[in-house]
Image (cartoon, rainbow, N blue to C red):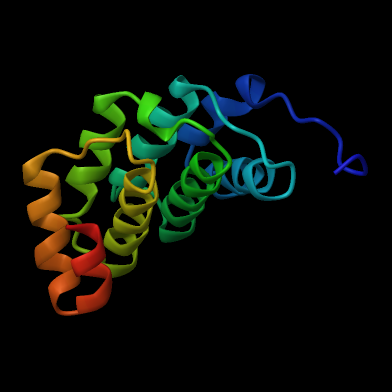
Length: 144
Protein backbone atom coordinates (compact mmCIF):
# COMPACT_ATOMS: atom_id res chain seq x y z
CA UNK A 1 0.00 0.00 0.00
CA UNK A 2 2.84 2.42 0.71
CA UNK A 3 4.10 2.04 -2.86
CA UNK A 4 1.08 3.84 -4.29
CA UNK A 5 0.80 7.62 -4.19
CA UNK A 6 -2.24 9.03 -2.45
CA UNK A 7 -4.72 10.39 -4.91
CA UNK A 8 -6.90 13.37 -4.08
CA UNK A 9 -10.23 12.10 -5.37
CA UNK A 10 -11.90 15.41 -4.61
CA UNK A 11 -9.68 17.16 -7.17
CA UNK A 12 -10.63 14.75 -9.98
CA UNK A 13 -14.29 14.01 -9.23
CA UNK A 14 -15.58 16.57 -11.76
CA UNK A 15 -13.62 14.79 -14.50
CA UNK A 16 -15.80 11.76 -13.84
CA UNK A 17 -18.67 13.55 -15.60
CA UNK A 18 -16.67 14.29 -18.75
CA UNK A 19 -17.10 11.69 -21.43
CA UNK A 20 -13.44 11.91 -22.53
CA UNK A 21 -12.08 11.26 -19.05
CA UNK A 22 -14.80 9.24 -17.27
CA UNK A 23 -13.29 5.81 -18.02
CA UNK A 24 -9.87 6.80 -16.68
CA UNK A 25 -11.15 8.68 -13.64
CA UNK A 26 -13.56 5.89 -12.69
CA UNK A 27 -10.62 3.49 -12.89
CA UNK A 28 -8.67 5.71 -10.47
CA UNK A 29 -11.58 5.52 -8.01
CA UNK A 30 -11.61 1.74 -8.45
CA UNK A 31 -7.87 1.55 -7.75
CA UNK A 32 -8.21 3.76 -4.67
CA UNK A 33 -10.87 1.42 -3.29
CA UNK A 34 -9.21 -1.88 -4.17
CA UNK A 35 -5.47 -1.23 -3.87
CA UNK A 36 -5.47 1.45 -1.16
CA UNK A 37 -8.57 -0.01 0.54
CA UNK A 38 -9.96 3.50 0.75
CA UNK A 39 -13.37 4.13 2.31
CA UNK A 40 -14.95 6.97 0.36
CA UNK A 41 -16.92 9.88 1.76
CA UNK A 42 -20.70 9.60 1.46
CA UNK A 43 -20.53 12.31 -1.23
CA UNK A 44 -18.15 10.21 -3.31
CA UNK A 45 -20.25 7.09 -2.73
CA UNK A 46 -23.37 8.90 -3.95
CA UNK A 47 -21.43 10.14 -6.97
CA UNK A 48 -20.28 6.61 -7.84
CA UNK A 49 -23.80 5.25 -7.45
CA UNK A 50 -25.19 8.00 -9.69
CA UNK A 51 -22.57 7.28 -12.35
CA UNK A 52 -23.41 3.58 -12.18
CA UNK A 53 -27.05 4.44 -12.77
CA UNK A 54 -26.57 6.63 -15.85
CA UNK A 55 -26.64 4.64 -19.08
CA UNK A 56 -25.33 7.67 -20.96
CA UNK A 57 -21.83 6.71 -19.78
CA UNK A 58 -19.73 3.83 -21.09
CA UNK A 59 -20.12 0.36 -19.63
CA UNK A 60 -16.50 0.57 -18.39
CA UNK A 61 -17.21 3.78 -16.45
CA UNK A 62 -20.41 2.39 -14.94
CA UNK A 63 -18.77 -0.89 -13.93
CA UNK A 64 -15.69 0.82 -12.48
CA UNK A 65 -17.89 3.13 -10.41
CA UNK A 66 -20.04 0.32 -9.02
CA UNK A 67 -17.04 -1.93 -8.36
CA UNK A 68 -15.27 0.95 -6.59
CA UNK A 69 -18.37 1.55 -4.49
CA UNK A 70 -18.60 -2.15 -3.58
CA UNK A 71 -14.93 -2.29 -2.62
CA UNK A 72 -15.11 0.88 -0.54
CA UNK A 73 -18.18 -0.38 1.35
CA UNK A 74 -16.45 -3.73 1.84
CA UNK A 75 -13.74 -1.93 3.85
CA UNK A 76 -16.27 -0.16 6.09
CA UNK A 77 -16.80 -1.44 9.60
CA UNK A 78 -20.26 0.02 10.12
CA UNK A 79 -22.20 -0.43 6.90
CA UNK A 80 -25.45 0.40 8.72
CA UNK A 81 -24.33 4.04 8.83
CA UNK A 82 -24.74 4.38 5.05
CA UNK A 83 -27.40 6.87 4.05
CA UNK A 84 -30.79 5.51 2.93
CA UNK A 85 -30.42 7.64 -0.24
CA UNK A 86 -27.40 5.57 -1.26
CA UNK A 87 -29.23 2.30 -0.60
CA UNK A 88 -32.27 3.56 -2.56
CA UNK A 89 -30.01 4.60 -5.43
CA UNK A 90 -28.53 1.09 -5.56
CA UNK A 91 -32.07 -0.30 -5.40
CA UNK A 92 -32.96 1.68 -8.53
CA UNK A 93 -30.00 0.14 -10.36
CA UNK A 94 -31.55 -3.31 -9.83
CA UNK A 95 -33.95 -2.35 -12.65
CA UNK A 96 -31.15 -1.47 -15.09
CA UNK A 97 -31.31 -2.93 -18.60
CA UNK A 98 -27.82 -4.40 -18.26
CA UNK A 99 -27.60 -7.59 -16.21
CA UNK A 100 -23.98 -7.03 -15.19
CA UNK A 101 -24.84 -3.58 -13.79
CA UNK A 102 -27.84 -5.10 -11.96
CA UNK A 103 -25.63 -7.77 -10.42
CA UNK A 104 -23.04 -5.24 -9.22
CA UNK A 105 -25.79 -3.29 -7.45
CA UNK A 106 -27.25 -6.51 -6.02
CA UNK A 107 -23.84 -7.63 -4.73
CA UNK A 108 -23.34 -4.24 -3.05
CA UNK A 109 -26.78 -4.38 -1.42
CA UNK A 110 -26.09 -7.92 -0.20
CA UNK A 111 -22.77 -6.70 1.21
CA UNK A 112 -24.56 -3.90 3.08
CA UNK A 113 -27.03 -6.47 4.42
CA UNK A 114 -24.17 -8.45 6.00
CA UNK A 115 -24.08 -5.80 8.74
CA UNK A 116 -26.83 -7.05 11.02
CA UNK A 117 -27.69 -3.46 11.99
CA UNK A 118 -28.35 -2.58 8.33
CA UNK A 119 -31.92 -2.43 7.11
CA UNK A 120 -32.94 -2.75 3.49
CA UNK A 121 -36.44 -1.64 2.54
CA UNK A 122 -39.07 -4.24 1.65
CA UNK A 123 -39.15 -3.00 -1.95
CA UNK A 124 -35.39 -3.52 -2.31
CA UNK A 125 -35.63 -6.95 -0.68
CA UNK A 126 -38.43 -7.87 -3.11
CA UNK A 127 -36.36 -6.72 -6.11
CA UNK A 128 -33.38 -8.72 -4.84
CA UNK A 129 -35.59 -11.77 -4.28
CA UNK A 130 -36.95 -11.64 -7.82
CA UNK A 131 -33.48 -11.12 -9.25
CA UNK A 132 -31.82 -13.82 -7.18
CA UNK A 133 -34.64 -16.33 -7.47
CA UNK A 134 -33.46 -17.48 -10.85
CA UNK A 135 -29.78 -17.28 -9.89
CA UNK A 136 -29.13 -18.63 -6.44
CA UNK A 137 -31.74 -20.16 -4.13
CA UNK A 138 -29.26 -20.62 -1.28
CA UNK A 139 -28.16 -16.97 -1.34
CA UNK A 140 -31.78 -15.86 -1.52
CA UNK A 141 -32.70 -17.98 1.50
CA UNK A 142 -29.79 -16.54 3.52
CA UNK A 143 -30.67 -12.97 2.56
CA UNK A 144 -34.31 -13.29 3.59
